[in-house]
Image (tube, rainbow over all chains, first blue to last red; front, side, top):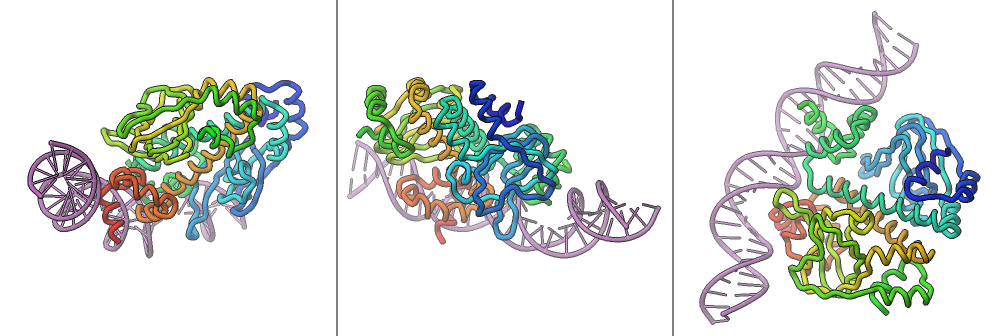
Length: 186
Length: 186
DNA sequence: TGCTTTTTTTGACAAATGTCAAAATCGTTA
DNA sequence: TAACGATTTTGACATTTGTCAAAAAAAGCA
């Protein structure tokens, strides 16, 4: 089954007709380490799924890169502003490893939302789930110390620590690389 | 027009039939300052709108209260876990002023989602908009200093500083009350 | 008005984290 | 293997923010 359809189905059922139609609209994309999927200011309104590879999204602030999210195999990927609001992205999305993606355009997605109750529900559930993830992340950032945030990552995304360099992890946790190095030494 | 319907309509059109049906399901509620709408562990699966009053939602961590959100007049209000996932809330919701609310149960909401494409779209758009708000908040917490966060609030929610005590604001910004007092002195 | 309670401010100090520069380590490739 | 570049660690120190206790100010109430 197409990897994107497989992920969509986690949020709700799809009739086989819709599934067939989806298959016609979904495209794939292969990118290399270091490539950008999307830079700040661009409007790339696709919903992606990562079949294989590793992705980061980050802000550019005062000539610094601040990571806010990492995407792994089978993760859903998109930028909120282009995808939900058809507006320029305020984040960058870059590949940290060679990556294979499947995607559907937001235009096609919108058509499905109009024609299919199932797809509309899936779209809603995806957004709802992302709310949950984001609330958890705000909570982590608001109330936990650098050390606690590191332990949270160790527990919840141990693979991240294997595959991602310390500098990237540190900025994701909102701390300096040196502080993270010292925390990790313990 | 019912205040809740008015807010829903900001996200999409509603047929007059659906509007009539909604009117039959929406109830109202008056609460006093200090009352709780919802405590940690409870499942109160309603979607509320604040007609008049002021609301906070907060976590209890190590016998401390950490505010994560304030709700003002005409704001949409609900707890993600009960509303989206029918699971116990991990947050508390309390009134900081006498407050009048309108609400619909998530069961009724789900029925509308099934029967009405428009309502389903509105539900999706609400979740999508909340994603945007939450991303902005994570970003603020991850990359800004205490002082920058205070200035952000000053610019984006000046009314909050008028109506909410300093201690509550400080915890919302993720800083101590003393630090906020010193920042404000400048 | 005067009293009580709550909220805010202040001071002294401690703890956490950041910054900068240099050294050490690791990985890749010639 | 040797050499290069990228990543990580370490040290010294500065800055930010937190904590605790007390004082001051403001708000609520009899």
